[in-house]
Image (cartoon, rainbow, N blue to C red; front, side):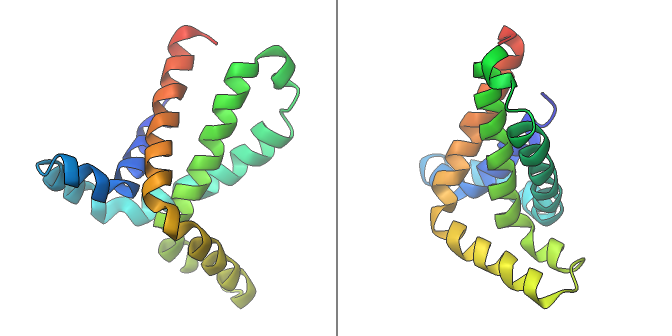
Length: 138
């Protein structure tokens, strides 16, 4: 459940324009978190890739024994990667020295950027769903 909090924070940053439009007082709170978005995003992108490989792909057997948990966990993994790439690509580029890999990261971010607000909302929803599944034991 601990991963839900950083996912929710990245979701809120992704949907910040939508949140601030409805609640202007949230701007101050989001501004406090914004300086850390690069590192938070980089960590979430890396952990998202790890989860996609080891939970979504290699853990497909859980779909028969725990379908709700598997589906929510898979959605969380994908959202961690997507939001992590959006906010952490700048930080990740400092560690990657291969021009092809940097170009591929730029392509991913270019494809995701138009959907930032939508991804942010979905990220917050999946974080809440992840917590709910944990509490309900599904």
